[in-house]
Amino acid sequence: MVCKGICIRFKATGRSINGGRYIEGQKRCQRCDIYITWNVSVFCPCCGTRLRYKPRNGKLKLKFNEAKNEREQAEVLTI
Ligand SMILES: [Zn+2]
Ligand SMILES: [Zn+2]
Image (cartoon, rainbow, N blue to C red; front, top):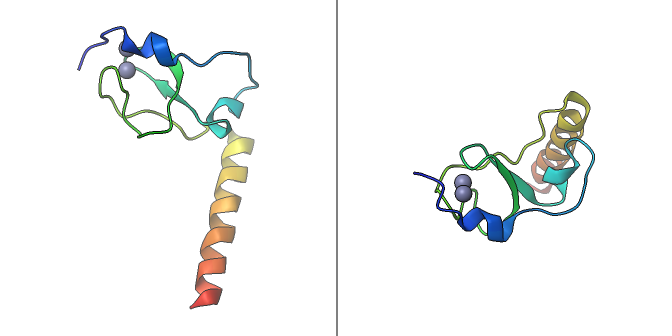
């Protein structure tokens, strides 16, 4: 569970607004202290740590939850 330097290959490029990275499919590895573009799994390809991919920002989190609720409601209606 240590940084092996592999994460550099997946390093997310470009600037992004706060929280926007997550929407773009970029994930944060706290152990490697890096943003990576990694959609294969929720675990870091470098150190194996679970990646953070949900926005912490309040507004963005709300959006995230709203979308989730809409999905759930749609599921309920189809039953
Ligand atoms: Zn790493
Ligand atoms: Zn990592």
